[in-house]
Image (cartoon, rainbow, N blue to C red):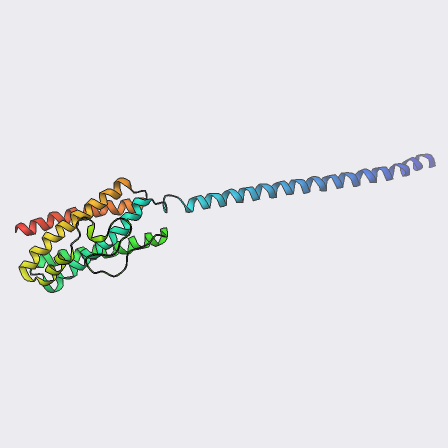
Length: 222
């Protein structure tokens, strides 16, 4: 009896040691698993960050030289059209011509703001805010007075000096030429631009201004 009790007592330390080893091993494995999980989580977060960075430079903000040129040159082109349209308030004889001029001003003013916002977002130089109706600075692709459809200083002076029915005819003839120049510039953007928003605006300019050209020609014939 005592012999059997002795054998049980002698085996207890070994069982306790084995138990401690098992517990220690489980703790070690749990720690390894935790580290492995943390590593996967960090890797996953790193991948998300890369994706986010890639997304920030996606097609929404992608642009090329043609987009920059389009924005830089269309701003002064629109500014001159707005300046011409503003003259209608004191000089237009026809209510239809006055309404057309107001529509041009209402459409192209916000487009100028949009174009300026893009250039700022792209880190590119924007033309001066000052509008003198002729030359708004050289943006690296020729001065504004050299762009298609732009009126020179003498033409702008003639328009400012006219009034009544004579002003209406002069305005319509000049604005048709001005619109045709804008459409020419917009076609270049559609063909060569990379930014989808800029290309979409160019397509809108082509559509809107072609419609207005048709209207102006009808007014000249009436």
